[in-house]
Image (cartoon, rainbow, N blue to C red; front, side, top):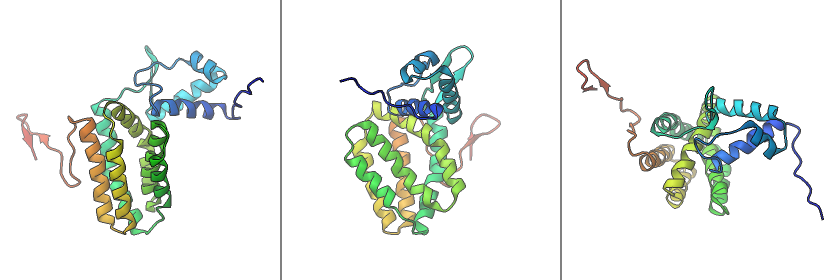
Length: 232
């Protein structure tokens, strides 16, 4: 009996983009790994054109880097990248959740995502469910622009997380923190849920990148004075 090849969707570019993105965010393609158009085209059974377009889109989202000399590679993860991405999350995501709770928006999607994470068969499924949990907390905040801004850093945050989890697995701890955040939100404690979410994000950064300084929500970053010393 001959096997039937998996049909390629009509939008080849979207298909290739989704497949490459999935492989990056699940660790199948590692940071710094070259992405060769001809190899990818052969793997996906398409021409180089949809591969090229998919890589351009992924470069725009920050998952891959296009260089005149090195070609296309999966973006490297370092402390500077993590600082930029998680600074945005720490500023916006807890506030979005606070607004979601104030609006008494449905959190069914967040509850379902936690259930999927708990029963996931592998780290890829669990990672995806965790990402869906966070998104389900901020999307109903009532401000589509705020949700869109968080969506824009979502993939980069997932890339940082994938690298950190590979080095320092912390699934059980994060699952417990997710449950606490959801319980506070369901109880209508907007401030408590927001604070728990911020602590959750900040503790992950401290574990994965201890060299990163985590600022409080009202704590200004110190700037050097003219003599080179810190000033408030």
